[in-house]
Image (cartoon, rainbow, N blue to C red; front, side):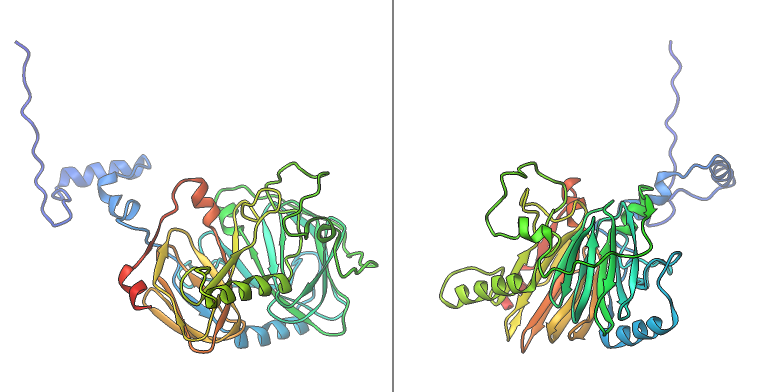
Length: 374
C-alpha cells in the first residue's frame, strides 16, 4: 500500500490570515531574506490592492508663488552645459523628494531671460511646452523655428534635436511636460548634447511644420506614412479657443455637443493617425462655462492640470482648493476629480492614459449620483 501523509493544518492567528509566528516560521523567514525571497502571503495586500493606491498625493502649486522663484532663478542660475535648462520641477509630496509630479509624469516651469539661449540637445523622453502667458521665445526643433505664444501647445517627440532662444527684451516662462519618470523607471533613457547655441536667424510666424500640417482635415499626399508622434510642432491658441467656444455655442443652440452640461473639451491629436500626439502622453483642453459643476470621475493613470484662465474650485480625493490662472495641480491614479466654477474656468491637462490603454489597463468610473446632482 502507498503510505499516506496527513494534511498539515496551519492555524491563522489574526484577521489578516497570517500564520502563527513560531520559531520555525521565523527561521524560514530568515532563510527567505538570505536568499532574497519574499513570500506572497505577507505582501499580497500591498502588491494587489482592491483598487489603485498611488504613492503620489493630490497637490496644488500656486503660479503666484512659482513665478517669482523662477524669476529669482533667472538672476542667479545661468543656462548652459551641465544644467542645460532653467527648469524647476514639481515634486509630489508623496514621492520621497523625487522631481516627479506623478510616478509617470514630469512637469516644470522653465524660465528664459531676454536674448538668452537654452542649448541644443536631444533625449528619448517625449516632451511638450505649454504657454500660460507671454511670448518672444522660439523653440527650434530639428532646425525648424517655432514661435511660442500664450495658449500655444508645442509637442516634441523623443530624440529630436531642440533648443530655445528668447529673441525679445522680456523674460518668458512656460511649463514643460515629459514622460521622464516612466522612462527612468523602465531604464529606457538616452541623452545627447547638440550645439551650444541656437540658430534663430529665421523667426517666422509660421513654422515649416505648420505650413505643411496645420490645415484642418487636409493631409499632404507627400506624407501618407503614419508617424508614432505628431509632426505638427505647434497647436495654436486661436484654433483651440474657437473649437471650445463652438462646442458651448452648439450646446446653447440645443445640440448635445459637450462632455456634460457646460463642459467643453478637445484633445490634441496626431494628424497622421488621429491618435494621441505622443506615444506616452495625452493632452487636452477643457472649458467650463460659468455656473458649471462636473461629476466626480476616477480613472487609472495620473494627470497634471494647469489653469489657463478663470477661477474655480477643484476637488481631488479628500483635497479641495480654489484655483486661478497659472495654478498647477496633480490628480493621482483613481483619485476622484470634480470641478465647480462660478465665473468660468479654462484648463490645460496632460496625462499618461496612452500607456495604460495600450496595456489594456485603463479604467474609469463616474458617480451616477453626483452626475445627477451636477
